[in-house]
Image (cartoon, rainbow, N blue to C red):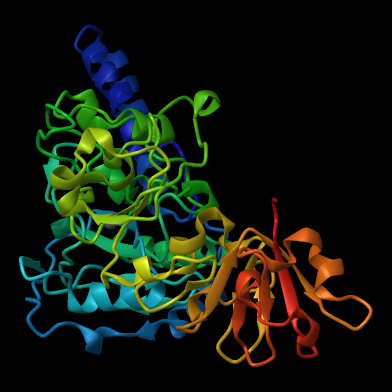
Length: 453
Ligand SMILES: [Zn+2]
């Protein structure tokens, strides 16, 4: 909900100034000032507790009715503890697809044998098509914020609701997600009497202990939901400063500070990505997950190295530029199998993992197991991409081979090249260099040509 943007934290210094002034003035002036303070205080109350929202009661009810209950999936080993107070709503991005998000949130994380959690990592999950799942009863403490601090208050999980948006902090959040999460937040704000300043992202509240990248306690441990735009969720702009940085408890992270707290005009909302460059380091992309075995580094050579082996195999300062960093790759190994231009979607990987920002472009093609072919613009159900869907990225087409338009006319000199792809009616995708007889291509073969070259 968008409430009065003049929140309590803006007014507090004003009142403090008034109280200081009061000590210096006469009795009548004191009474006048008291009146002014009373008016100011009631304004704060009215601002904080009178919802001014663009959502209707009917919309809120419809969302509540549509919530899919997944509470029964919760890991029985998760210990339910009732939350004593609720002061924040924390938004996360899950860095995965809907199925793996739901599984991890409910059942927990298992990273090889060394580390595991018992689920209960969020109260709600919002899929890319805007469906809301309830994964833990909102009465209980969810294990979602980890080492965290806001305004001097630590362990934010104990006093907050956690919402996971299916998607990536370096990706986009869909309009349907914004609408659903906006409504959900609106509902929760009414229940817990929270104004918009109570809605924060995980990367705003997470902090890290000194490490190899930063020498002091710092922001930047998480990048989670740094792409969450409060205004697109019908919320007032976030805090104008980071209270813990201001108080000297933490050192800022330059990127996060410029996203959240820079003056509106100077704010940098450049699209970030998950590709290593001079400034985009492993730390900046993955935060404290940089050295987990489930964070994979796909080198330009095609080789993939898990985070816990980077130090030994190449060293953190020698990761080549253009290495792609993939988070939450719970199922290991499959990536190396996809060496050619045709990539396979399976449970552990999403279209985003494979295509990045290209995932919804017209030059990315999806070959569904049932035979349908669609480009990224034609796909709408991003949560429902079946396993074993194949993908190609950076292509144009399809061009149908006919008697009057043989492969040589369509593809020119590159008709027999490896990157030229032939999609056969039996659903096989064959590279130009392995087609046996171009004169006997079956009817209805489709050709896909690389966009460049
Ligand atoms: Zn998070």
